Length: 384
Ligand SMILES: Cc1ncc(COP(=O)(O)O)c(C=O)c1O
Image 1: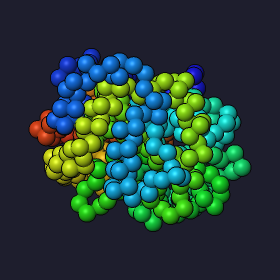
Image 2: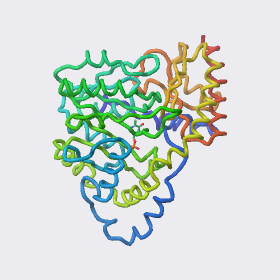
Image 3: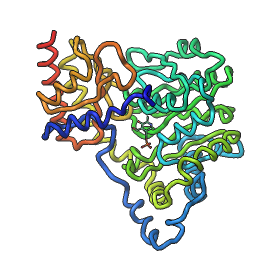
Image 4: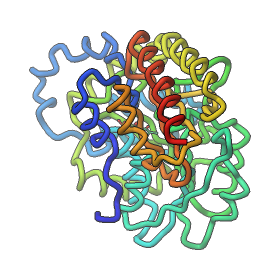
């Protein structure tokens, strides 16, 4: 545990609380809550004795069956005898289940940098080694480098699209290449689709689990947290090959026993609202993204802010000798705005920051971005 990084969100949270009035562009959450269909589904749930008992370790059959329909219809994953759908207490747990199920202590898991910090932490906690492969200047996959990093100890390649912390959406061809690489080299492809609905313009997220013949080596991870404003209800799910069912059941039985019953009832309701609920929120997010894009363009001489096609993040590369955490501390102290240091995502050279714009109403987000740009201008000038 001493080697596992300390979660950064509470650290930045403390800075924000210590400077009242700070606008946080830190936490990757959405500003909205669950759809009314989720609330409606709860009526009578408290009176139902099943709500208060343990349920099936892999989730209720009603929710798993609704998820299978969603996966077939939206993700084109032909859920059948080769697959199992498992409900988890969020996407993070789904990832941990996946790592514990496929890897032994000392095995290697390939992650792309910048990575989602909880993935790297989970790999370390499982006693495995995270092998880090840098993405390119636009945060896209470098398939050749990933292929070259595979060793006899490699158990899985992890991809996240749309991506946290960069917003990058990987094209179908790139994900097909990775999936084929995994098939050919006998490793798993773990693909995190927590932000599947969060894409802009005509861009669509592709599910590698839909590729013919991918079932035996593909693990697909999902979350209700962002799509349905459900972060506090802790519901996610995973599609695993049938041969991993027993392993995942052992892990989940030990860690969770069963996913929370009342949350599963609410999730079943939320699924009735479906993808359109989240897509309806995208216009507002796209407006904030555009405000941020324009603002960052003004400081392009010392701040690269690649515009990506998904999620609700910008990953900034700033030309300054300052360390990222020192920069964040000054931004909070002097300009009342917070972001997350790039070091938390495995970027140790240079100075990078993740800016999240999903958790705030448009006006507040615009104000926060304004403060960030002014703050960066001033601090970078003073420290150069
Ligand atoms: C890529 C990614 N996967 C998983 C999660 C965790 O989601 P959950 O709340 O479902 O555990 C997040 C949360 O930020 C995320 O960014």
